[in-house]
Image (cartoon, rainbow, N blue to C red; front, side, top):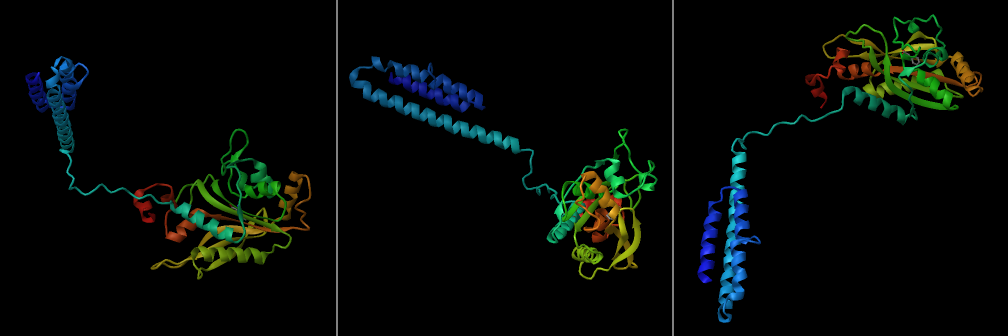
Amino acid sequence: MKDLIAAIQSDALARIVAATDERTLEEARVAILGKKGSLTTAAAGMKDVPKEDKAEVGQLLNSARQEITAALDARKTALQDAADQAALAGIDPTLPARFLQPGALHPLTMIRDEAILILRRMGFSLAEGPEIEDEFHCFDALNTPADHPARNEKDTFYFDSGKLLRTHTSSVQIRTMEQSTPPVRIIAPGSAYRRDEIDATHLSVFNQLEGLYVGTDVSLPDLKGTLEHFFRELFGSGTAVRFRPHFFPFTEPSFEIDVKLEIKGQAPRWIEVAGCGMVDPAVFAAVNRSRKDNAYDPDLVTGFAFGMGLDRLAMIRWGIRDIRLLIENDARFLKQFA
Ligand code: PHE
């Protein structure tokens, strides 16, 4: 029995050392320590060992098992190390790490969020409306007659259903007033669509931010003060802002707003950034007809509205000369904002 154990032990150790991968090592373990393994089988012979030898043989069996188990563990670790080494052989860990580009907000997102923040501080809350709009909300209710050029099929994207891609966010003015009674003080950022030739200052999809304030005592000075404050918050307290008389069917009087752009080394320029005006009573009348009440009684309420081009604001803020840069997703351009 003692000889048998010694033989099994030396045979087992040789087999373990000879194992060249984890699979053959596992086979060796099963052949020695498994249910039908050589050492397990030998241990079953304990019952035939004479009583006086049992202690000694038992000890031999135990130490053989311990030694074999230790050898299996050691071999397993060695084989795993070797496998790791082989896997790393093609890699040079001294090379500099690959640089991951940090993500960043798009300039349009940044300027929109900033604009929203400033207007929210002044008490405006967010509203929205659909981009696929009907003619009533986009034109009729905004006092824009059927023969107005903005409604021309050459200038606007129409669907077969008669709906259209909204040409401005002013439709949200109507939708808001249909749903709530005065006072209302809302802003609505969103896309607008026009059949414009695409060039350095025009896209067929662009971004506007609409504003509407209706109450019992809203006046032209409120409009002027609100928007001057807005542009100075956005572009700095020294920013020159100018209101030019203009025409919009849905406001009277109406203005376009220019901001003076001063870039070092360039002659200063006035850039048009928004349209605005006092809500035309005809708009209130259309809203009342749609609501079937007189909540916006033109004799009792007044209001101002404005719509600005967010793309233009971004161009002014960062001195961007070509609006197309805002949609091209050129990483060389966008990186500057990261
Ligand atoms: N909707 C007008 C435009 O797109 C801008 C505007 C909005 C003008 C609100 C007056 C009042 O040009």
